[in-house]
Length: 397
Ligand code: ADP
Image (cartoon, rainbow, N blue to C red; front, top):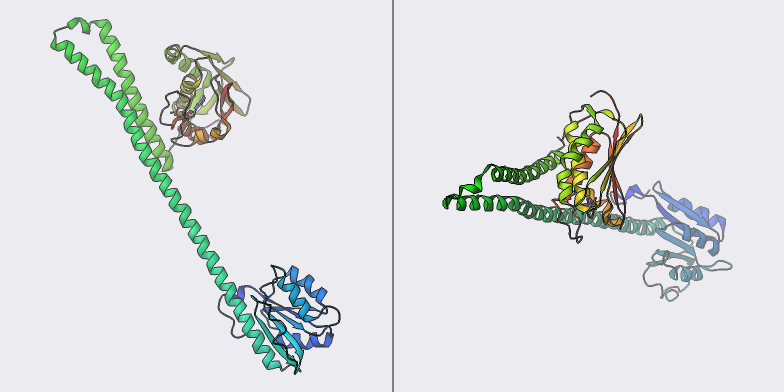
């Protein structure tokens, strides 16, 4: 029994190889060196030994020097020539009195030792124990190094993630500041202009028509700030897992008709219009307000990125699910961007279209999933994109 085995090394069995052409020698040696935490492999020729060496990782090879065919030294020479076996320590067993030390100088990296026949069991055992302990310690060190390496890799990945999160937060702050500044600046300019008109006593600037225009313009700026803040609140609700939906009886064709007509003015400003294909009402149990939010997002994206061409909106359903496709004919989305546009703060670049905070699709997908539905996209660059909202037609809240 190997009493010197270091702690922690017992997890693996240690494999030993003994090579001798005489079966009784193998039996005797095996009896001397075997232990519970070891497996002793026996080979009766160099060829047999090589086959075992290629298959297993040995802690030690004990080679009889004198064997017919390939002798112990030749076998050792072959072991030295192969990466897998180069580092295995070797103990040569030879007849007493032979001068062996010169014989295998070339075996640089692996440890080499000698035993002489007739074998003294105690000497054999203690020599083997030394090699086995060394092997176990090496394995333990390797395991620790690997563990440390894995820990380091985890730390590095966490650090990288944190850096990314910090960078995203900084970018987000400056984006929010910028997005809030635009409507605020416009409002501020408006108030300055009105003040100037008042100072000049120019009351025609505040006639009923002008006032209606002012109220509408102010309303748009305020709406865009409210939207922005709502989006940010939604993101923090999603992050903290408290985004909830309140399903009730909802009809989708109605919603689509209302929204496409509400956004008709915005579409006209973009030089285009919506084409709604909703042959029949589609009833279901969904959170009407949240579904509207998703559809508005898809419709405004269709206008924004649709290249000024008509945006088709198609409603269809079977017993299981309702589908809304929003189909634009814009530049489309390149393959590598397709999955990313659903990530928070992800905005397309370089298409010259002013984009928002990159939160719309992220929030929309979360809302679809909160309904056990999906929000997906297919796109052919140059030919536009199809965004599909699919909602299960479950009844009951
Ligand atoms: P944003 O506020 O930037 O529009 P979204 O989350 O709604 O944020 O969209 C993320 C990005 O996905 C956009 O910046 C844009 O690059 C891309 N995208 C969204 N809809 C379309 C579309 N219909 N066609 C092409 N690109 C789109």
